[in-house]
Image 1 (cartoon, rainbow, N blue to C red):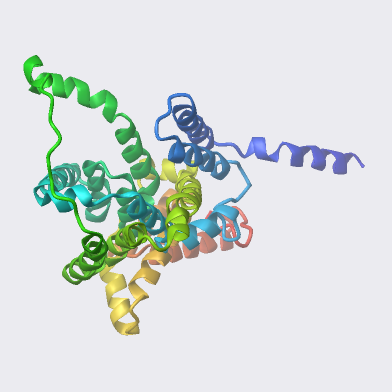
Image 2 (image 1 turned 180 degrees about the vertical axis):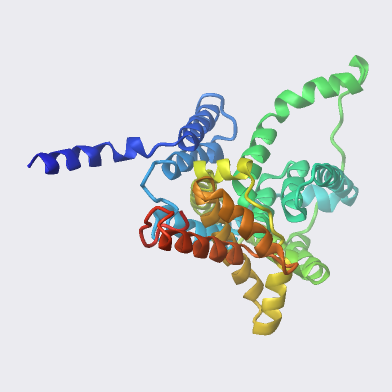
Length: 378
């Protein structure tokens, strides 16, 4: 009777006893994001679900991002497949009026100027020693474009998704604070008092507005096929807006679809901010470029989606390694990391297999802790 009572009491406090410094740190960061979103109004539509998702994933033993986890389902279905960002792009297209651009095509140069920010950030990230794909994900922040930053990160560097998303939207929410001192430094008081008159431009016909998203989709997708999902969804949303015959679809794209996708995307971004993953990044989980291995596998499989499937599999393997990184035996890590990279095209799957084998051998010799099936490397 006493042993049953003690076991029951231990079960009640098992969650508390399982709290780590990583969990506590990330829970504090999650609360900070909620504070910034709710009290300060910094991009609340994304920071609030991100903050709450980070709270959920850092509850010990809840296993929200486990194989059968509630957040893992949405992450695999919407982030790894890039569906959530693309649904948001449909809404962006439905809310965008391209008439000023059609009336004065020269203003496209203002948008092109954003590319300077991308390339400057890319060069800085590479100079700091970041991996190429991670640097690409970080570089998109330089264009001050949150949805595109999320899309690029989910496609090329899912491990950076949480950090990139929070940085991108925090940066954009701070623009009203950053711009005024820069403007005052670069202009005189007389220049700031100039009143810009409205330009008298010719109206654009309805036929032109309808043809624009169709033509842009065709030509831009032919020139950059990999960008077809992004440009196609934006232009689809704009076609819904300009066609004038699908008001219900336009309204759904602007409201319900965008709101639901934003909510689920925010939760999934927060789910990438697990304490174990954050500490693993600091402690040195190796960064592998898995593209050569995935491209070789795709050529052998002769399937169009093989590269994406391979990348997603590698990301899951990396997440599993990162979750257990700080508990792994140092000798096993020292042995397996060079072994996985020995062939020239390292993969996280090989590293995970090596670590599991080393763990099992250690247990056979009575040097390790017993593991529970399904809990990964320990």
